[in-house]
Amino acid sequence: MSVLTNEPPAVKKDRVPTKFGWLIRQPKAVLSVTFLTVLIVIAILAPWIMPYDPIAPNFGALLQPPMPGHWLGTDDLGRDVVSRLMAGAGPSLLSAFASVGLAVVLGVPFGLLAGFMGGWTDTIISRVLDAMLSFPTILFAVGIAGILGPSMTTGLVALGVLFAPQFARLVRARTLVVRRELFVDASRAFGASNLRIIMRHILPNAIQSAIVHAGLLLAIALLAESSLSFLGFGVQPPGTSWGAMLARAYAYMEVNPFLMFPPGIAILLTALSFNGLGETLRVLLDPQSPKA
Amino acid sequence: MKPVSYRDPSLTDNAAQPLLSVSDLSVYFRAGRKSSNRVVDNVTFDVARGETVGLVGESGSGKTVTGLSLLGLLPEGIAWTEGQIGFDGKDIGKMSESEMRRLRGRHISMIFQEPMTALDPVFTIGEQLTETLRTHFPMSKREARERAITALEDVGIPLPHKRVEEYPHHLSGGMRQRAMIAIALACEPDLLIADEPTTALDVTIQAQIIDLIMKIVSDRNTALIFISHNLGVVSQVCDRMITMYAGQVVEDSVTDEVLEQPLHPYSSGLLASVPRKSVSSSRLPSIPGRVPSPDAMPPGCRFEPRCTFAQAGCEAAQVLHRRADGRVVRCHRHDQLTLKGALT
Image (cartoon, rainbow over all chains, first blue to last red; front, side, top):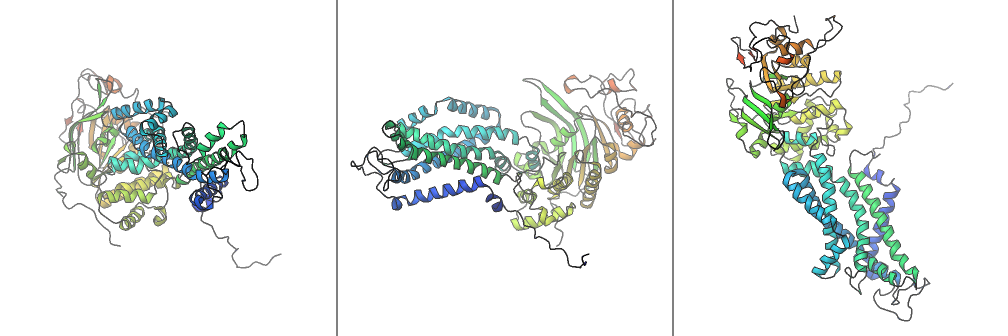
């Protein structure tokens, strides 16, 4: 028989669940964030850490397979693929972020306006969105690039404009639901103005699906940039991006199929990370989803 | 901490003048391209400062629409009003949108039926309270937070300094309704409109919330319009009871008098259908039929098809009779009928 003591049982100190604690227990989030951080660091440091000049041709070593010195081989002009991947990371990421950013900035306000105002405003905005969405994406981008002249800036502006209707549509649909919620009427009953209701109550409740969609679109933007570069409307040679690399590799597919893999896999992994990041961000910003 | 009062000194404290004076208020809803339905028909009533008035009736009797129109919260383009709503001597109908905004939450506030959806899920209770406070009063965030904690304390929420940091989904239904009341009363309005504030809550919580509303309203001398179909609750809360049927006021009397002897057959029917333990009949009495839809109103007395006292003469349109004892009723037989109340 044990002796009873007055000593209280050792209480395990309650740990207050924190957002950071939740975050580091999400393998998807940790992997995505780590990968993107490393990528961004490489993109920034590229001019100093590249083993070779990414644009100087070396006609003595054309289309080499992977080997010591050229870990991922060389391309059709004998340029080191590792160096070109590093040099292309910056333009690729930049155009993805910039085009999606532009799309959010253009699309979200129109979506909010259409959903909140309804009536004629909604009809006009929705028909314009329909018209834009019915246009073939790449054709439209080529058209814009053709008018403004081919360059990376043109390419990303074109993509941003093309992606905007998707955000507008998403946000409009959510706004239609949220503006009928009782808390919108309640805040109006407590004296809030329309602008305040849109910014404080509708936007935060309508933006969640747009955040996830931004993650998906970042991946699509990476690929779209490569399509534009492939058609010659993106990054102009001798500059490079992953899309431009993929386009060049395609031309030599039968001679050296390996050349497609480095930029392709880089695009794939980055796209996956963007998706993971978008999903995690949505859960993180939604106070109603359990995080503990 | 010294209790802060936000009562506006510019308000006329004239006891003779009613705080709210609704006259011939009609609300129309668009029902098609060219037609419209009159869902509230020439409603007239006054609410004095500090008075508690019950607005009772079945679903579809126009009581909620009346409540919303007092705040100008009817859906724009779909509904419009006629008549005057005087608040403290000013006509609400003639106010601009920005004047209305300054009125809402500050002088007239509202509690809604569904506490589960009336709070914004992405902001904490504290953020929603301070938002309303800072809309109407220039104050620092810190001051607003202090004030928010006091407001939560006033409505009996335990650990208010902790609850201000929590999101609506952390709270139970009763606690959310308390939080709603705290927000609605944060600026110490002169008139509170409570639209079925206890319908979505369970019975024990209902009693607590009603006690809370009654206590705060009488402590602060706030006028109350209590919209409900629950006569038991209304008789407990309200000095006066306005019975609405099919968009019209059918009776407006002091609560005790209605309970003792209602003047309109509809009020009597409502009272009879309140469940009571002492009545030994096996079936709960009910009023046969239902409220006529707004596009198919009977031309005469709107209650006539369901009225057990209907006779020749009832098919004529009914007007409001103001009796010598101050009670108001819309029935031409009010002098002849002796109707059953809740106490007889």
